[in-house]
Length: 164
Image (tube, helix red, strand yellow):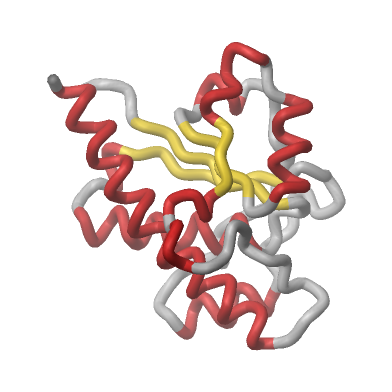
């Protein structure tokens, strides 16, 4: 079997946005029958929460939509991630800048904003819900679901190209 396509989602602490994106995209891949073909993970650009479960609010709002985040644990981005993953997707411009600073120049084409996969969504970034209320976590999931659909279409094309 060919090596799996890899997608890494990144935010600052890896407890709200990026684990939510990991959970949502895993579910989208499973629904499409592609979970075995794609490696999905998430990481933070800072290490404040390494080893911790996602924020309870993120887990609660995700669970209301049928997404499981309970088994995830925060970790930091590592330089090896830029070689292991085909796409490294930042939630916002600050995290994209942090990733660019860590990424070897030869791998820079792998870096993108997640919302680049949902240009009609009306937001270039997934805003950080940490200091807000329930509406912020719902907005994060809305944006991630939209971007996930575009990302899924992209991954399908990439997998088809690998078969050719």
